Image (cartoon, rainbow, N blue to C red; front, side):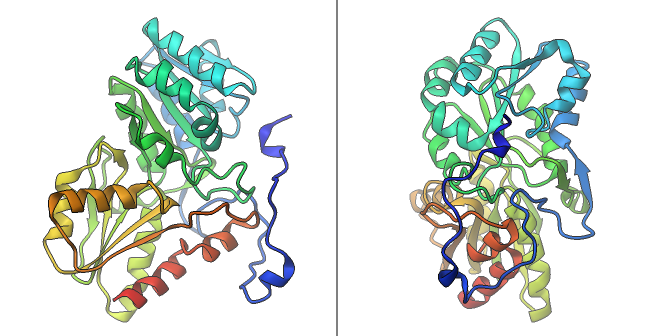
Length: 346
């Protein structure tokens, strides 16, 4: 049985707790993040990896019963002799990848982020990171990108992995980011954890002349009133928020931080320190241990104190199951919710 069919163990809040909340008509539990009419690209990770492997025979693809649900099936179809289905056994998956890396291969392993971070932490730490092995761990359903509830919502995966030495952490925004990140992390000599968006992934960053560089943050737009420092699909939400706020004559800058570790400290300190605007860190992750605390710690250690600092992030809680757009509104990470929050902070 495929893991995507596994029933959640935590459902939505009781009806009497929902009566005063807006209800959306969609029932999608794993929905596309793209708005209606938004440009998308199908399976960017799978296509990028399959293309890269044409010139890199050492690249392998391994998964834990989730090729279809991590877009690794595209790689499997293109390179069936280099694809390994390891079954529902993430710990075996990680150690098998470690062994292959010891032999000079570059394994790309996929599963859900919840399974990689919670079930295999010690195996990644001792078997991969401590050995400095060239394993790329690429995981779908990071943060709140599924409505299946806490069993599948990896809202704390970055917090779990940030404390692991020598592990690079990447959180791409859109299809372009993923397509460009794949060869970049393959070229990096060492272990990488990358969050994935799957299926029909939105395409937004090409409008900003963007190019992914490992370890570098990019200012996508400028503005004197507020600065949003963001990662993952929350950069897309930040750009949507900035456009909505223009109607109220509020000018918002957006700094995209696709590499959480190592953090681009120089760029973040420069952008936060150059004006007296509101600084907001937006992330698809719990408020604990993610980009927000990484940026706050950097500012504290560097003596850069913004006049106002706020976080848009998921609460430190086990989240509800339900329709994904409804949950994004409920937990404050939709563009409309961000507009409301930023207006209240200005």
